Image 1 (spheres, rainbow, N blue to C red):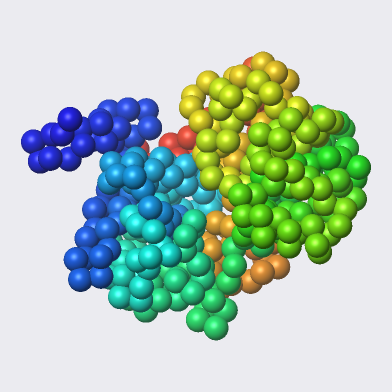
Image 2: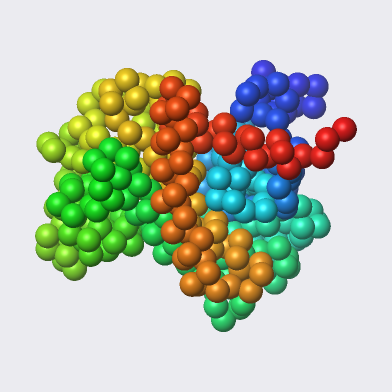
Length: 364
């Protein structure tokens, strides 16, 4: 079903009427010469310019792309609020297979669309986009982060993303077991790409036992060859059933926690880098009912956005790492609030983020 303009009615309902909506602005972008089709969604600028990455993905439909942009932008509002940044939430998606259609012309056209927003949206890398891509986008748009150091940027943001997830794991260990150390804990990581392979290094350095899986078998092989103590399993279904698993870290795409996976999950803690891990509302309660401690994804994976935000002010890695280390304290505070209010940690994090955004809005 479509509206009078031919736009998918379900998308418009999401934008204007559902709990997942409330967005300030959605921009549909098209450049026929380069083949660019993109969606830029700004959820909130209450705390400052919207900040969030650009996802390049072969969506099955334009409606699916718009829905993903809306969900991701909303998540960025909460992530940036919980990270203590003076930024609202935004996200962009480019529709298409980056292996087939990505080109300099397309990225430059995309940069012009971001620039047309006049600084209301600051972009960065996400799935399907990389530092080299942001260098190209930045040629048309000064509101671009995640650039290479040679072009005034901070480089790969996955370094601090993994560090923040590691801090979240330490907070979960402190809350659940009374000690932040991960030594001799067994941690299962689903997805050992940009972020996951750095997380492996942090965990091994502390003496944890690490189990991994990834759809890219060559990536897994690279990890196990460098670190023979790392155990590889066939797939995520096998990983979540590993006996005596202490922590499960979803580090690939979203929806990892759903009606099929939560009932069989052996881990006592879920703490990973993937965005939108909860497949639908209610999963957070299912986790709590099973006694599984969930560290909200947008809280623990905020190290990357802390890094790219700092790039706007002249990047300093040590300053960023100090900010990312506070993810430990923030995660502990969420667990405490959840216990105090008798609600799951995901709901507690939402309340804290919403309070910060509400207090930032000008009063009538």
